[in-house]
Image 1 (tube, one colour):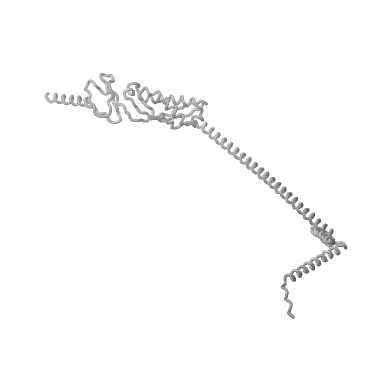
Image 2 (cartoon, rainbow, N blue to C red; image 1 turned 45 degrees about the vertical axis):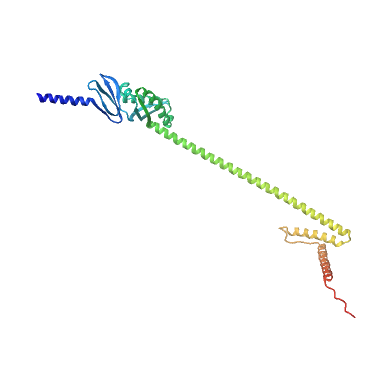
Length: 320
């Protein structure tokens, strides 16, 4: 009997010590209740509680947690049915609120997130829901975080993992994408042909302008050459006229013969000219030119002898 009492006392002491000493692990917070009423929160570390008066209520995980959102069918604004799933990251900031403001925190948060996914995607077209996933995540995060704030929870991130349209809709989208790409390819081809035609026309325009400018420059230079030739002929005529006025008839003969020879030269240049008939007077004129040339040579020789005699040293007279 005595040993049984001792055993009971030991058991009671162990139970009392177990209820007296509380060690809260890192990353958790425990709520404390006195006769079923919340009185405080135990942070990580060693704590002592009065047994049978205070008791541990809820053991809350204060670390950031991940909650998978199961797949669900959502109807978009343009009546397309898509299958959506996601993942949510959240953290309990207030253990007391998370323990006593909501009955089942994870179930409540999950229901709230799935409802808001349907709401957000239901307000968007299918193309928007497929192309604006970041906007969807941001909108869901704002709505869900505000709704879970009274529960002492901070939703840090919501990510839509997959948005899957039905198979027939995927095939229709593929055909649409193919048609759109073919359309863009045809537009690019047409634009390329248009640019090529413009460049070709511009090149022809520049070529015509350069050709016209070349002809203009050639005509200008030809007119200038004719003007110089006319001036030279006028000057030569004046000189011949002055020579004739001075009594030199050979100058007139030279002038007429020179023009005659030039005319014969032009006649000889004709591509169809094989035989050239000259009038009888031609030989006479050419003879006049030869005679004039001989006279010019004699005059030049006598002028050179006169110059040499004047330049030679004179011999002094011999003494008698």
